[in-house]
Length: 627
Image 1 (spheres, rainbow, N blue to C red):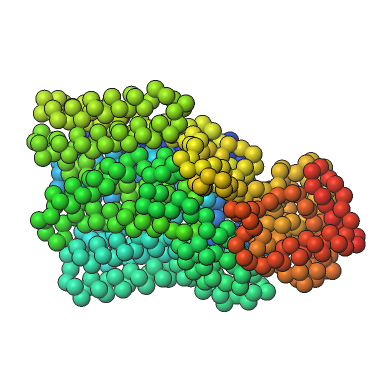
Image 2: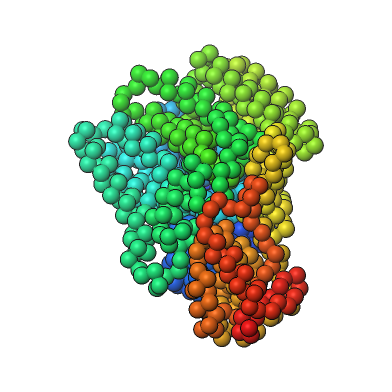
């Protein structure tokens, strides 16, 4: 980060921003307990088995992997090895990634503006971008949660920073770093990482200060670095015999490429996910990012970012081809436009927390646009656009707050009045101290998202589908989130038309002390002391007993892992002690998951036909050693 020529307040302000972000992302962190128990169980497995660590297995005995590549699990598993398996050791790495992402956005905005605006404006723009990111509700949520999105967002943001440096210097080294970071993002959440590539590649090709031939081979090297960073793990898994590794969860053919291109790839776009939840895209369309389900998560500053993107691009229309600021606007703007369009129109599974991938780009555009306009605030050409952005932001914040009219009902009117005052101050900026105008504008613009972020911190989140802020009623019909382990889920869920209900991903209730004692008794004598249907149910028992639990059928219960014949062989070899029927369910729309194997159902039927159940707590338990 730059220090030469900085105003005296720049470094203390940055430290305050990062410290405040750290407090926001770690306050009461342990209250969420296991957060997403599906991933926490995999972290527990990786903390006790290096094989499970490498492959991302759901259990330490490595029956099946999670339905993602495992890179996001690795930092959590390492801290769990160092400090024990608990909520803090699992969630703290996510918070650290959040602070690092805020710092990276700050640095990227400052570097882009360096030499174009005064140092104090450059520093202020970086601080504004960092604050916008830190207080974006979905960012506050996901940097306190153990889904793969935190690592994905950090890697893509570091890649964007590397591209800013590469474009300015025509640097092969920084461009290769950019490619490698995008590849690392693939190992966190697969093809979603590649949504930034159109913008990244086009910006460097058009704006780097190097001859065309050099730009082409530099991009080729960066692509090779990306493929290497993304593909080394995939290649190793492909070379390991299937019998020597866990089954690849989320697939019908035990293939990482199938997982990347199918369940986590094209299936997300067209809704044709074999073994997935089918088409749940009733709210798909160009307004999805602003709708009831997603608006409060990400869109508070999204109108401002888009307006500033247009204004900034127009202001720099006559700049040199290699202009850093225009290139940065293209980089972050392309990120928002491509990723936002895909999220808006995709027909497969889409959850509100995916929108965290937009947060760094929205924040950077706000910082860049404000930094460009602020030195012109005493002229109409700068004051009028700034006033318009402030008014639009206040109006949209009011609209979002009216979706929860009983939650802090005073806040909406305060934001509207504050927006009008801010617009007036900006129009009269020639007669007011700049720091007063800037302070009021930032406070008003961030009041709504800050309130949502505070609500997110105050109420623990756990389960599979979580949202930031208060519950929001759907404008189209019923909205519901999964109950997870019974903790607060926040607002949101799938937006569905009237008369249709979607209930997603319910796991078994926490096991009784009696059941835990039963599963732990003589557990060391078995590869899997217990087996149960679906990864969510298995995670509940595994986290309670701290022993491997086989997740039959994987996440949705539709993977052919194991087959009935394999399960019967495990039983004959006395590798599994108990089958637990805990009553957990998976449903999608008005029916069962979309296609996939029925091996899990066949296994359950075989067990119930050949073994006698006894009730332990709320679960039915079958002793597989005693026919």
